[in-house]
Image (cartoon, rainbow, N blue to C red):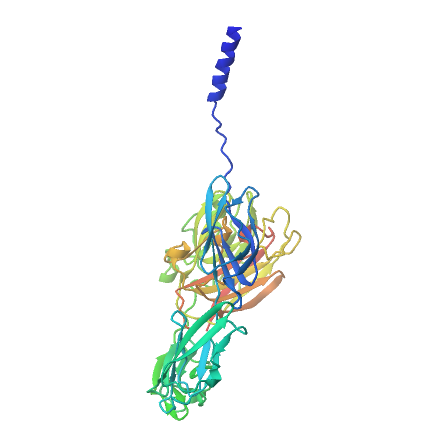
Length: 533
């Protein structure tokens, strides 16, 4: 009996010494969706673990109703229930727990558009939101003791009350105070009026290649505008404002000649500024935009669209990148981007983008301004978008042929939430162009190619509405183009006052290649790509 007990004891000790070396599954807790009343937009950033909410200006930011929140896995436990009425004046924190803790931050902004104008105003009012001050300049001839407020909006639309009634305030020889009330907010705004010594003056002259943007300030109610002429000529062209606010006014003039000197002046009534001169920019084109130059400089397995032995300096280094490096790294039988000498519009070749199923993943034929950075096993790759560029073109044109294949179960890897694509649909080709002032420190790329995209991480995918995008244009099609067709892609500018630092041009035979979705039969030919100014 003692012998049996001894054996059992030894077995118990042995069993207790066996280590469980099977690792627990790693589940990174994240918010997958959130519903917020009065929200204009909601951005969930899993990398930064933040939820950024933009509220309608009429929403009470101190009483925001969070209707629902959900997480990426049933095992995720929140530290508290954030649903219900919440004060989002300041960010709130939420800890999500699986095997580890993940601290998330929910933050909200409520942009309010404000304006204030007066009779005989010169220029645009200065509205200091932080200190609740409005500064207005009026003409030197104005009677500062008998002025009228012509428009006022210092809080959310339609829900503000003003005390006293703005129509009753006439004497601005000293500061005036107006109380602005909305929701449970009471704000005291100070109104200051100054008399201007100048009637009209230029604020900005911004010449592009074939267009100029001019901004000036004069007296509200006067006939305001600009005059412009080519340097060395006598006849002036009069240009009326396209936009006015108080005494501030602006206009643009197109149809100008590149790299040419012009003269202009601003006027308000009978008063004029002095003559200013400016020179338009040149018509810079993209390197190797006809795809005539290629080599095996990087690998004998695929073509790269530059040649270190070229006689032209701009063609000796890489400007265009492709997914060739990634597809051949994981053992593809052929490259997905290559020159085509059998079918072209001009020169001796075009570029052919061929979508394909590479080992265990679908890959879109592609070419883009930037570089393929590295491969992530068989899961995807990291690319860096962008090349230095400071001009401001109006559109991108390119000659294209396209053949759309059918998406199958094998080549459907997913899609964005707002994309209804499904198995059996025709694939879509895509060309897009963007100008921006991206900082590589923030976007993860390099100084040359600042925007890094990891195809295994959707949070890194390019956002056409990102804050550093200055202009964007896109072309998407699911129809076949059997003949060479000239495609025009207009650029829509978010602002005309910023100058870009980089340009991104991206072309793919399958639009959802980043999601590993498309068709093995999709083909896109491109030639003679040009920027038009």
